[in-house]
Length: 214
Image (cartoon, rainbow, N blue to C red; front, top):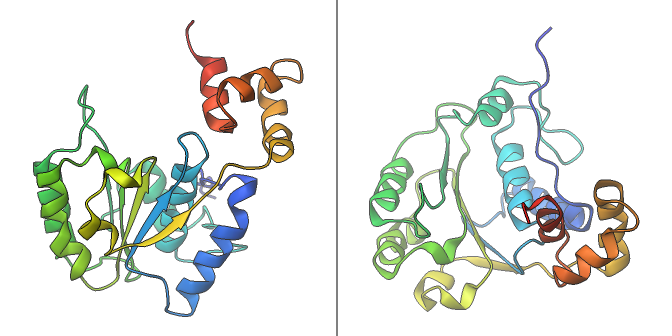
C-alpha cells in the first residue's frame, strides 16, 4: 500500500475560511482569482497551499485533500502538471516578468487530471509593476478551470486594476488565546508568550523567531 502524501493543513483559525472556500467551490461559485491578505506570519500561505491541494485532489474528504490519490502525491512532490507556483527565485526579493510569462502560458493549457488547475503567487507584492501588468489579462480571462490564489502581506502595494480582478479575503491575526494554544506545544509554555509578543501576534512568525539562528 502506498504511503500517504503529506498534506498541508490550515491553521486552526483558518478552518472556517477553508470550509467557506470549499463550499463555494462545490457550488461552482469559487472566484477564479482570490487575494488572501493579512499580516505576515498569520498562516495565509498554509491556507493557500491547503486549498490548492484540496482543489487538485481526486477524493477530498473533511475539507482537506485525501493524501492518497495520485494527484495528492504529485502535489506533495511539487510535480503536479495542473499546479504552478510563483515565488521569488534564488536570492531575488521580487517575482520577475519572465516568471509571470510562464504562468500566463500555463494558464492557456488544458487540465491533465480532474479539470482543476491552480496557480499560487506569494507574496503578490513581490510582483513589480511590469509583472503585475503582464498578469492582468490572465486575471481577467482565465483559462478553463483555472484558479489563481494570490497571497499578500501588503495588498496596498498591488495595482488597483489587479486588486479589482480578485475577490479579496482579509484574514486577521488570531485571538491571542488561540495563537498561544497552537504555539505552546511547538515553542514551549515559557517561551511562547514572549515569542508571540515579539512577533506582534503572528504565530508562524513567532515560530520562525524561535528557530532563527540568533
